[in-house]
Length: 179
Image (cartoon, rainbow, N blue to C red; front, top):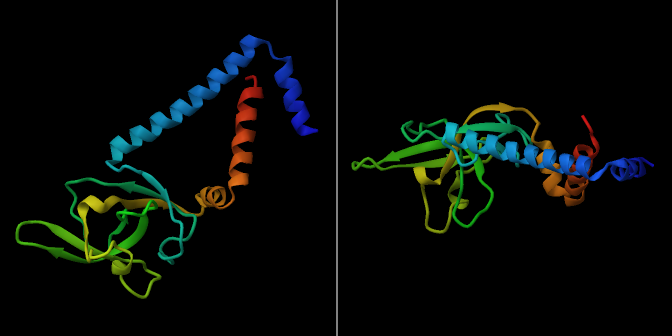
């Protein structure tokens, strides 16, 4: 019954109203993309907001926590700092704490990470033959978080039908909502 009401509202719209609603939806999507790109510039991170996907950082962060990242080039990485890094050949970034830092005489800094809830360091996660991470591997450093807000993202990734249902409902709401 609910979906029929949406369809009736769309049928009653004239072409001008329908075009206006589609344009409104496009403006919302464009605004979201501009905000994301603006956050990338301000934070210096390619991904200024990430969701914790596993329990490897408990008790500091739980699955579903939303992290806010910065990645200032001039800030040195320190032991104990929580970093988000990407490993070559893996699509999903990892959130772990810096365990050790190795600084060479020429100024190159390499570091080793470990999840707080893991018993061993991350060398087993790194690509074959890699024993340390470099600054180029870092996506960002955790500066703040909101607990459990990212669980919606996890649900959408784990259940694709749920994702499409939510997106369809949001799209219909924007098209039908007249104010």
